[in-house]
Structure formats: structure tokens, C-alpha cells
Image (cartoon, rainbow over all chains, first blue to last red):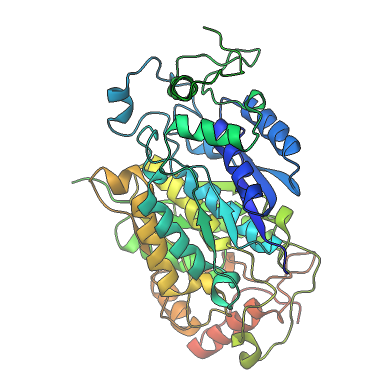
Length: 230
Length: 230
């Protein structure tokens, strides 16, 4: 039987680490891809490398893209990262941490990588529930990307398997994601979620990513193994 | 009246130079974007800079992306570039010069750039007629990308103008493209089309890109101002 290969987008955060474990359980041989896109929280790339190694991926590639040259996001400029927002604030509108067209750029590069690896499956840890208002995390966006990808590529147009974008976490709460990861044996001490870590890499504990993560562990009744500044 | 801004994908070739002139005639203030993607024919980036300057763009950005790290194309590896193919060979199947998901990656980065510049319009010189078999040059692909882009971005989801991908050349023969460019005052001596130029930058005269270009000028009854090896 032919080997099933998948490209997994791996940020080094809790969600993508869980996605990778999910893809392995589904029987995929996994190639991980991460992006150095001018993000301020580059600690996540070290986390991605740790997660990739701990889950024995077939390969892990870090691709440089200079999204920061375009400006436009608090994650890639000196604009302040929002702190201590409540859920109402988080879910109203698109936040300043939105990076223009980020998932589209990432999925496009994952698609190019997948095509050269002979992988028709791409796994991305987007989430439409705890999603902080990013338009490119919604199911209708993912469906539109998949449709486009099948028209874009040799894989999609010369028969064979069609391109499939898997979003195993899209309908899960952060608590259910954490519970799934535990079940799959993910070591969350290796992951990094914070948008604005201290110089020593510790999570700030107050940005949207930290707040959602802490809430997820609390609701799942599990201890978060990473260190926070406060 | 609000300024109309467009992002124009500028490779330095004949088609994209014509697209830029078209966009200016349509009244757009143009930001040009080019890509250094590991292509063997990097002379085209110098051509892109000449064309951008000659057409007085608002800005010109060259973005680095390491598509070559993925392999998979004769344009980014040491695989031989096909030479002296007749039209039957050119139009049968996807050639080895196909770069996996190239237009998807380029359009995604153009979309990110457009969003940060406040441009809802993107112009790309794809061509479905003289197109050498690339799946990501077909109208149905462009429509699918546009639909996805409107779901992906702040522009597409918070009202305002929807994202539009313009493909002014998609139904034109190379001869008609050359004729249009002449009418618009494009200086084709600044452009570069060859996939496999000599060390001094002269076009090889035998790759698909050279053959299509020469045929276009011949059929338009115009002289091609660039130098060929043979």
C-alpha cells in the first residue's frame, strides 16, 4: 500500500503540536513546515523544532518569508500586543495581531512543499471557536482554499489524489484540544504560545494567546507545564 | 475621490510589463512586486527593476522566497530547460518548468502586500492561450483564488471594496499582447523572458519562453528589441 504523506503546519504552539499528533494517529508520514516571517515571538520556532523532534517527523523545514517588510500587524511591528482582553473584546472584530493574509501565504507554501513531496494532504491547526477574530480561520475560508488548491496544482489537475486541507481542531474548544493532545501523548512543555514573551522565553501570561491557553488548561482540569512571567 | 491602488506582479517579462502599462491606463496607482524564488533566470529581476522605473511605479518590492528549497522544477534546479519544442509538445501536459504552486504563492504574497497598502486590486499577467500547460494560469483557477482571497482578508470581510484579481492578458495571443504593449508605450527592450539566458544575459532563443516571445513579435509584425544568442 502506498505511504500516506501529509504536510503539517507547525508553529510550535499548542494547536499545531496537537495537529501533528492527530496526523500521526491517522497514519500519515508527516513533513513539518514552519515559517520565520518576522514574528516578534521567534521563540516559537525553537518550540517547533522541539515538537518536530519529539514526534519523529519525516522532515522539518523552516521557510523564511519577509511578511514584516509589508508591515500591518502588531505581531511583526513595534505596535503593542493587546493584553488582558476579556472574551467580548477578543471576539469583536479583527485584532491588531492579525497578519495580512498569513494563513493564505502559509498554506500556499505548504501546498508547494506538499506537491514536491508527493503529499496531497495538508494539516493546519486553525480554530473557528477560540479564534480571536481572524478571518482566515473560518471553515468557509479553508474550503475555498482547498478548492483553489485543486485547480492550482499538478496533483489536482492530473488525476491522482486531490488536495485535502485537514483542520482537525476547527470546531474544538481550547479545553478539548488540550484533552485531545493529552490523549495523543503530546508533551505540551515543549510548546510555546505567547505573542509577547520575556527575553528568557517565558510566556507573558496576558496576551490573547496566553489567556486562551491558560483558560484551556483550566477548563480541561489539567496543569499547563510551561512557565509564565505572571 | 479616493486613489485607486493596485499591486502588479512584475516578473520583468513581456507579459507583466504590459500588465503594468494596462493598470496605469486604467487609472491605478501601482505598487509592483517581484519575487526572488531561486529561479535560474535571475536576470529577470534586473529587468523588473528597469520596467518598474520606466513606468514610474509608486513602489517596487522584491520579496525573497526559497521555492528552490522545495525542488521540483527545472526553473529552480539543475534539470535541463526544454529547448526547441514545437507547439504540440508545449501544449501537451504540464512541463518540467512548472514550479509547484508558484502563482498561488506569488498571489498570496501579493494579497498580503495589497492588504497592507490598502489596495483591493491585484494584476497578474497570466495567459491561458500561449500558456505552456501551467494549471495555475487558467481562468477557473484565478476565479477560485479571488473567491478565497475575499474570505481570507480584512478587506474582504469588513466591507469596503472586495479583492479583485485582474488578468488583462488571459485571453490574448502573444501577438496581441505585444500589439497592446506597443499601443501603451511599453519599452520591450527593458524586458527579459528567457528561462535559460547566457552568462551575459542574452536570451537563449530556444526555450519555450523565447519561442513564444519570438513568435509573438513575428505575428504582430514588430521587431523584438532584445538580443538572442541564436
